[in-house]
Length: 403
Image 1 (tube, rainbow, N blue to C red):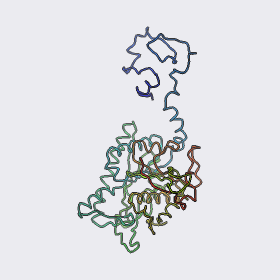
Image 2 (cartoon, rainbow, N blue to C red):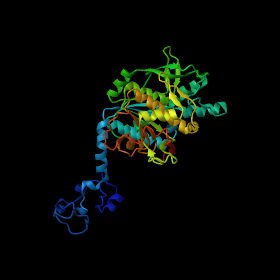
Image 3 (cartoon, rainbow, N blue to C red):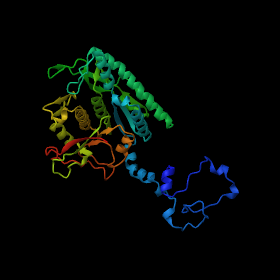
Image 4 (spheres, one colour):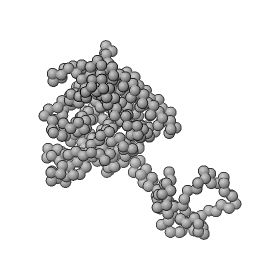
């Protein structure tokens, strides 16, 4: 991969030819062999290979080389590993970011990763319910009370979102010369929440079992598996499952290497300005599972071990902010996935290239990474030591928008 003309000009490299086949358009008898250390192609040529290397056209002049070398431990580490991506419904509504994320996901497939997609459609369902009922719909504890009408709308929107993801991912894969199938089906058995804290959640439930053998067969032959936020009881009744919870549950059931949550309104953690600590106003990018549990407890959130239901007990003022609440819920289900054997969980932005920098670089990611306490990183700079165990209680954690 050669630098573009602007970069070549900055490095005093020769311009690229405008023809696509220089050899065929040149007079063979007029060709000369010259040293790579001649930057000025308009002056007299020299075959002296001992020339100064300051102006040499060497591979190390290309930024791509060092980037590829630094990324190689991650490429090797992620090859043949299983990764679960959560695609939120509001991302599908943002065409530019959606196309970019699908393109990056396709690239991870080309790197040899086994992919499972959990696709949400909360935004699409809420928009239709708002229009139907004439008022904004609300979620209780971050979970929807799913009426029969809401369930019908969910079934329709889940089909639309599934089709859009299949369409875009197929386009991205085929543009790279890949031949891959996107497979979806009834892989989830679900069960109703029922009445929780005095509220009947009607047709909302949680994933109970996952057909891991079937999914593993598909991804082992390099197919991509797609799941929607619909599960079915043993007697065939459809239930609404929160897609973030489904992603964490699926990753845990498959013993995936990673679960990645995309966020269209991303947040990052930083040290509080009032902490007087070394972490003050510093970004906190990588934390351990024990740190995540402390953060969740500090903000009053506990994920039920069996049902995955989010219980809020005396939430902090920050946790009442919808964006912070969404972030903490993702962290809660991500931590639950780690408890079930997932090595790492990521909460990242949907910006162009954010996924690739998060997975294939050290300390250049775009979000929050949560890992098992004893996780061994593939790169020496990629350790999960940004936050000490006592920092949460000391009030170190603050919030900032991802730029």
